[in-house]
Amino acid sequence: MSSNEATTPPGSTGAADPATPGRPAADRITSRDVARAAGVSQAAVSLVLGDKWRGRVSPGKAEAVRAAARELGYRPNLAARSLRMGRTRTVLLVVPALTTEFFARVYTGAARVAAEHGFGVVLYPSPEGIGPARDPFDSAAATLDGVIASSMAAEALTPLRAADLPLVMLDSDPDDDRATATVNLDIADGVRQLTGHLAALGHRRITHLAADVRSWTFEVRARAVREALSRVPGVRLRRLPAALGVDAGLRAAHTALTGPGPRPTALLCDDDIIAAGACKAVRRLGLRVPEDVSVTGFDDLALAVAVEPELTTVRLPAEEFGEAGMRALMAALDGRPAQAPTLPVELVTRGSTAPPADAPENAARPGGR
Image (cartoon, rainbow, N blue to C red; front, side, top):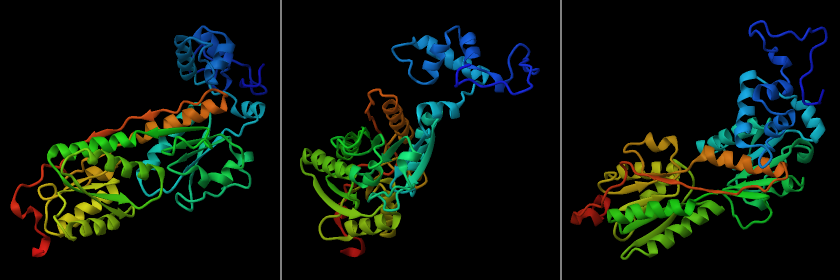
């Protein structure tokens, strides 16, 4: 019997599970049983369940094997497989923080794919945010098989890189060759969709409430905002930094709406949390969203539909993002080329945006300024 097959407990007769006549008990299902049920060889079962079937087993037979394994409740002997392959079957997912649900969704997607391959995922919020991430173990090399890092810079992972583990970066600079693979969202296209929406509504006085965070993703957003709006005649673009928080968004929006010059007709926010603060600032100044000021977000968190009016924003497919990152890492661990896709994003138009008011008093300051 091969090392990846379940063994029959001492003293067992090997009889069928009495609850299912003719079928072996769940703890005695072997790859031979799966092969017999799927009508394929044991070698094909090993290839499919080890995710090494592409180009060696037809898609139809691969699906038949997976279906048979599910139906029989087959559980491979992961401990034996890990010893044989010299793996811990554990992956580290590093994120800057757990302050938004975006990273929780990334984890959900990554863990789903990892489980399909018999891997576990340890979630590690870096104590330094996007800054240097310490090795959370005495030796990452002895504890982990690979690392996925979301919205971090590769140099922030130097202690982990010293372990010489495969590293997949998410939402990071694709030109950084220190990563094994980089999977990104099409952030620039999301910005183009958002700015195009505001321009089409007629907005020409736009303030960008930009996340005050030094990271690749926010640099991309700032650059894309400038480039997209530079092509729209008559646009007056202003940029104000804001920390990632509701209160910070409120303060930045208050400054934008009460500062010198004509009042902006739209506040373009780098994420939904800043946008929620901006909506509060608009209301506290006795103005209305969107009649007086349009507000947009980015991410499409649950918060986007908790505020009133609901936020126009850009939806980021966070779970699919995590899935793609984990697939890339699994490929690298199997010695296959790691796919590094750029996932599309989607503009979601809701009630927080409308054409700017045409009334002459639209440019007046709150409080008569």
